[in-house]
Length: 230
Figure 1: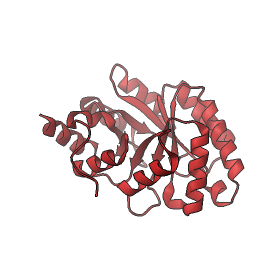
Figure 2 (figure 1 turned 120 degrees about the horizontal axis):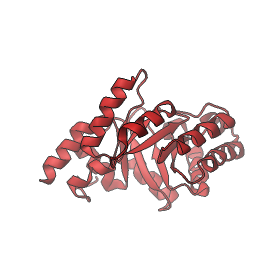
Figure 3 (figure 1 turned 90 degrees about the horizontal axis):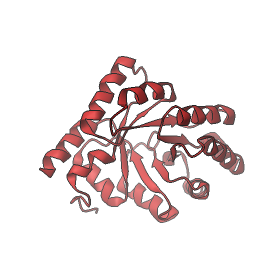
């Protein structure tokens, strides 16, 4: 059982949250409202689809909040060329971070070398302008595939790994953070998302080794953390 006494100061928690804005049908007006909220809360980033990167960058100029683009979300079922184009456009359009999905279809088909080349090609397209978070959609893989994907991520040299829970059926769990850390070592920082709704849950995930959390319940968790820190 993870101790729910935070290893970080409560007032530091908002700066480790990523405000997810990936809902289908997000309007420009809604994006503007959510970016204002992100500014007020002083979160780490807003996470948006490539289409909205330029708008989010404009809306957040002058603030401490960065823009993270989700490329290939959720399963990277796209050509390598399309992925490279999206990464390049986002990186040169001002996205300081990119959540970059690995092609799940390639992994499930046993095309591991092809999947690694596909992923590395997209990483290189950022030209070092954006910090890459490799997306680990762990619910889609069996245990042997998980280790193969984590090896691909480790060898790529990216600074971040995102544990994604689109297909896990259970959302963010501390044991998944611990599994990734034990398997991949200390070479990457960990972001995790998936149904994070309370400050206690957030604290448990940080204590397990996560450095960032992706969520939509950003306002309630950030405000409670700040209040707790006073």
